[in-house]
Amino acid sequence: MTQVVARLSYLGSLGHLTKISPQFEKSRKVSGPRALQPSQFGMLCPCDTPEGEAWGLVKNLALMTHVTTDEDERPIMSLLVIVSASKVPTSFLRHVTELHMVEQCYCLGVEDLEQLSAEELHMPCSYLVTLNGLILGKHKSPQWFANAMRKLWRAGKIGEFVSIFVNQKQCYCLGVEDLEQLSAEELHMPSSYLITLNGLILGKHKSPQVTSPMGLPDSAYKPSRQTYKGPEGETAVIDRVALYSHRHNNLSIKFMIRHTRRPEIGDKFSSRHGQKGVCGTIVQQEDFPFSERGICPNLLGSKAGVSCGRFHYGSAFGEPSGHAVMVDAISETLVKHGFSYNGKDFIYSAITGMPLQAYIFMEPIYYQKLKHMVLDKMHARRSGPRVMMTRQPTEGRSRNGGSRVGEMERDCLIAYGASMLTYERLMISSDPFEVQVCRKCGLLGYYNYKLKTGICSMCKNGENISTMKLPYACKLLIQELQSMNIVPRLKLAEA
Image 1: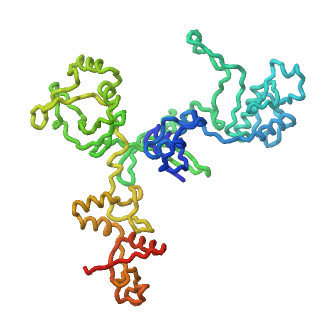
Image 2 (image 1 turned 180 degrees about the vertical axis):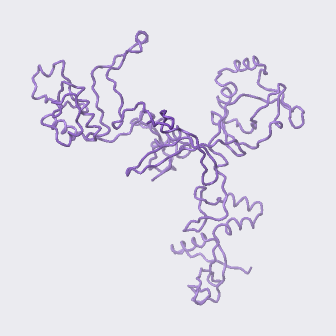
Image 3 (image 1 turned 30 degrees about the horizontal axis):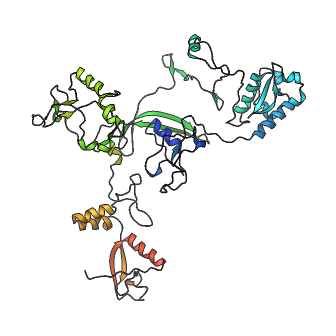
């Protein structure tokens, strides 16, 4: 199962990559699989879940979750035992090189506890070598041993998810008064190390420089904005370019395009609290109503757009004032800036010049444009691909499909009395098919191209055969019912 990653935003792509979809039937009304189990706390996000029937079933990993694979301990234990008891094999010599002490290249120095005395076990200059809590031996130079093991880890001899570190000191708690006494040069965690990923240390990288024709150093790569024209003729700006290679060292280029879109009729907008709405019309600035102070709003909302059932804290306090928590404080702020106490203003119509019959409530509101835009959803086709089994047009804009006319759309057309439009939508523009029907038995026949006539399989003749058109899906349904010993018969009437 493959799916294209959604790159609408950083948080959206992060949630898409960390999504967990179980193989559980979403239509079942069971609360157990939808709940967050105790063993999942800390690994799964308790807030990020979709709405609808997939609520609770589709979960996401927590932000700090790191997916690892199980690592077998026996190869590492055998490696330490072999390396500590004898010389390093020839295959390891290529990777365990350039150590600080040349004479220790052939031995990592892990000493067996069974061969040490009690005094040697408790010496202050010796360190224990542990693997998942299991003590394997002792070592006198932990930093050298950790560097040697990291070389083997970078060479791929040790698993990717094996952490190698030296725990020299324990962290101690500090109070607020202790933090004030620390300087910027002091280090609170002496056992912290620079994180390495696959042998690459994260840090600054200087671009290679070449010499310009004037003899001055010039950068080999200069970022610049270029215009890209897509296959549908939509122009965009290349915002980011990434170069990467596959397993077979095939160079690939991935780029992110950006397009600035102005609001159009049908675009979807929303506040920070889920108050969604669709742009109904766009008018000129001179046709917008204005107040006595000359303030002209840039967005008009209908009173039917905010239902009483969805009126919440964000609608009452968050939108009029931003972050205020009291109505009195909001009103005092409005009066201080020259507005009315309750936020209502006297509005004049820009078309007639007369004042409106009611006071209009004006407020600064934070609204955002959603990704549901008309330019992405607008689609039409005259002809195109069809489904092989039903011979009906494909479904979906991405597959160049047709618009679906379901049962409700059919009922609306019938209620309007548009019978010919219903006939055209459901058959002529969908899947018309010519069949041979026997007027005597009502079963489907077939056309004999050699005799150039229709023949009924039941009556064994073609005397009562008539040619008619019906949807191919209907013909397919009749044949499927016949395979289950259900014989539907068609009664024909004179046209």
